[in-house]
Picture 1 (tube, rainbow, N blue to C red):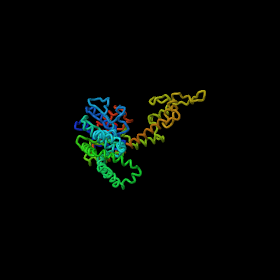
Picture 2: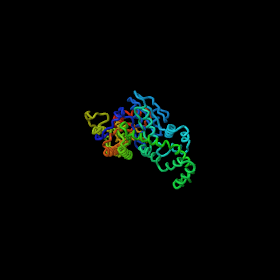
Picture 3: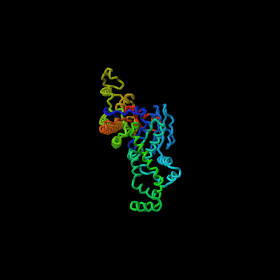
Picture 4: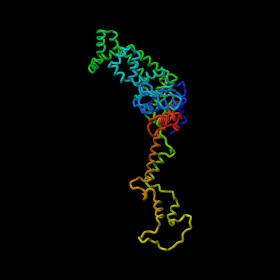
Length: 456
């Protein structure tokens, strides 16, 4: 499977080498290889001289395993074994720890302790919808502000939509500006029994059912949390907006990662359109796990036809051709070019046991000229014949060619919709990537910008 000449190849190395490129964001639907792609890009950039940090939000910890690190956490850790002048660091987002760091950095010690110990905050920081995506944005902003790394490679969260992290700041802003939060903040601002009376009156319609299910303690926890976080809400929104603008800046490049499958490329098309609508700079598409074949000239139809002929015995051993017929008529051991033996009427001699006097060599030659679908004396009973094995391989090849055709069709559909998007195809590897050597191989082939030189 090769790139259509009409589709421009994605040139990865110039992107990695450009000192103006400071952030690369790998996005795409789940299970398409975003984590591996991000890690491979980090290894390649580091070995080409850049100081890189890879931020993953993937809880499967595959990145740590492939880089030879026992574990990743919220602190960047240097990766050993980089063969080049640069450095590679890796980290995995700890959502709750990132939230705690924000609280500790923007509240005095007493208020920070009150927030961190608040039951509602503990639930919010551990699993509130959108918190992971928002904290990924926060951590990206922190890394960029430190100016410690030349390049930051981000592996986006494994959420239902890989662009949820773009919506997280808006969702959090809507939550903080919502009527529910403003209503909860009012009692704290009014204070005393009057405030609680206002809370009870204003929320009676909205929280009647909630209070029965969760009890008044839940509402008090929420109120305490909101009162403590009041001075920090503006900071959340300001930082989120700043990071959002950072993603739109010229130094950022988005790579959409997809597999050559209909659903994955449909999602990729959505990502491309969404990035364009948000003004996010798109570098191109990485088409991962593309299948190929070294015998692509043999079509699926021809391979299946050959397999059927072998299985039905319609293909015979043609190696002897007409010579085989002449040999069968000629005396054993004679050459086809030898003069014809004189005719004799001497009867055929038999051995004392009544067996033919033909030599063992003649008998062996006769057996070797059996049709291929017949078992020979050397074939182990119960084992498939050579023809059966060959037919099986032909059918496997036919299936592979069907996969290639389907992948080509889905890829062509994407490039027809978005011919402006550069594409890099990465061939499927026979096994999983689990070390730096595998990541280096993917990076090398990604740098080639085509399936002919790529694998992943």
